[in-house]
Image 1 (cartoon, one colour):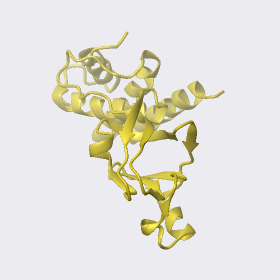
Image 2 (spheres, helix red, strand yellow):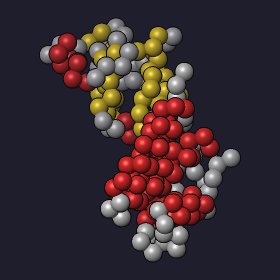
Image 3 (cartoon, helix red, strand yellow):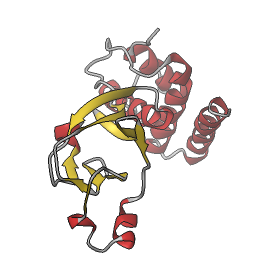
Length: 193
């Protein structure tokens, strides 16, 4: 069951010894909580969303905001029953200096350039479609009554990360480092096969 933001804010303020919110306004903590849940969601890849994207002939570079508006990170791209390998975008240049003009009968690889661009290489001469599996962005926390989007198992890591941020704001570096270590250990231990 998703937790409401107000409960998590109260817990985070208690952890940093500011229960009445004198050093940290609750609205600021809400903003930090929103960002922390987004970071944990990207790391854990819990909100996967498969989307069919129609491709354009002779185009390799696509704006993510146009083709995958809710995506934060692309996990996989399938063309038919074939999964395309992901490569770092500089690899395209080292493989072929004319990569921006390359054409082919099917896509061979994909790359993501930041949060803005999706590259499907080489360009196809006809329109087609792919299925992009991406990490969906979490909904913004509008107020303290808004429920979080991360799964309950990841809430302790979100709280630890939020605690680290609030301690940094207070210039409490040792407690901040301890909270970061707790968050990292929770995330890494929970993900071991």
